[in-house]
Amino acid sequence: MVAVIGSLVAFVVALLVGGLAIFVSARFIVDVEDYSYAIVTAILGAIAWALTSWIPLLGPILALIAWVWVINWRYPGGWGTAATIGFIAWIAALAMLFVLNVVFRLGVGAFGVPGA
Image (cartoon, rainbow, N blue to C red; front, side, top):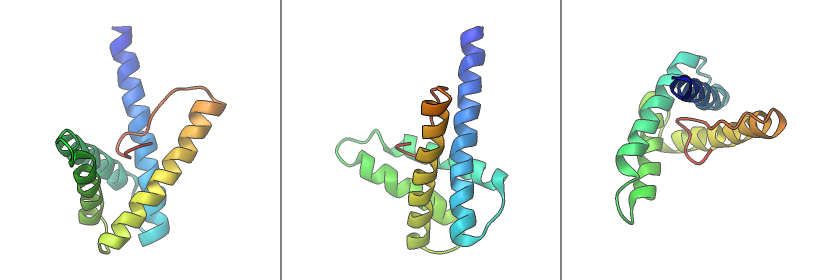
């Protein structure tokens, strides 16, 4: 039971970090200030990533395109804006994870932001 609760807490923290990274990026790029919207975007992006990343050879490229497509679908602007939101979200997630994992030694990830 403790392992299940620990896994649930780790998932929630990772989702909050991923959502915060998307929120910060979207706020900076397109001036959208809705954290819950960013969390839903993180969940949908993670689902899109999971559905496409397993494909042999092209999986990682298709997964990245699917993730950027989710951002493009959820936020105003075009593909370039969505890619910029994704890139800044990735940088923001890495910065947050550095603080959480190196400084505070929590060992968490960022759900919904690939590679972070």
